[in-house]
Image (cartoon, rainbow, N blue to C red; front, side):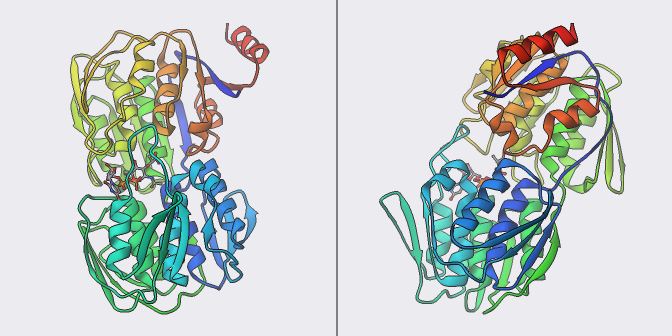
Length: 430
Ligand code: EPZ
């Protein structure tokens, strides 16, 4: 099974290009099925999640022409099935974005009920609440979510929790409903705004995305479009914290600094220098990291998808830090792995109390999920000695060429397949 082999100790130095936002791409790919005309999507991240969603779309008849690694042409005029097979939703939950897209366009869709995952139960009651408010009949039978509607009519929907997925799914269905829809308590993430902009480029009428009240006037038809996906603020934040943890000097390029404000603020707070320019942010960790407190919140708060990365950094800081995870109920699973590298962290409920350690030491560790996996790689980059990270398929779900980008910044990291390759790596790094 593929692993990352890492020899820690090198400060990361240099520039790294950030790719398109995975979580915007998944929503936009699904929304591209809402027109019978051709859609061109650029800056698509070449990661496992987007590949699997494209396969799910092709399985129902969507034609996807890959122009290059980061560009696809999509035509959904010949969809022949409205049921998304189980194994796609098992691979990525976001296949359920096809519910909102196909319900909006065809008034019918079926997708397997996504299970929980390593970070929490991940209910979808708010998605269902939104579809029902628009007049759809939604039932769960034999593990399938079946949605259908004689007619979709606009409505006033108040989300009980701030949910990115529910905001996105309901926005898509409402975009082609008859009449006006208001979504209150909507998620404000950059990828919600990116989807709204994409739908509007196809002729939708959506206002207020990025605020907690989104107003939608339904249209009967959407047309083709050419669209470029925004940069991935979580990939950028991951490299910014990698610079902090390895005492490096890294510039993330092709980013939108405003999307990184909460991440930059925390890096400044723990003693890093942060320089912003139009489409780049430079992080210099010139002195030992200080402690801080952070609570994950919906955007523009500190992102839950950056929680493992800041915990790895605070695990090497001076003093005691407190990190509270307010979005998901089980997102500290990786702490056991980090403890094996020398971290002093006590998890009580949804709070981690972190006493900064002198150093991490290399160990064999397993990635429990996408973002925690990336954070454990960062810990390995700072650790003394060699670390081996298992289950890197999780990391490759959301990070394109992760180890190659890290190598370009001076990291000693390789992807290894066999014990022999691991031994060769150990000989190489000495
Ligand atoms: C999206 O998940 C992202 N995934 C997650 O990123 C991210 O962590 C999360 O938003 C929060 O930012 C994609 O965009 C594909 P939510 P999503 O609905 O939409 C509760 C990654 O690493 N909730 O905003 O599933 C839920 O349990 C992934 O890229 C309900 O109660 O997140 C959670 O506590 C990991 N009922 C909270 O809301 C619902 O119907 C926020 O979840 C929906 C959600």
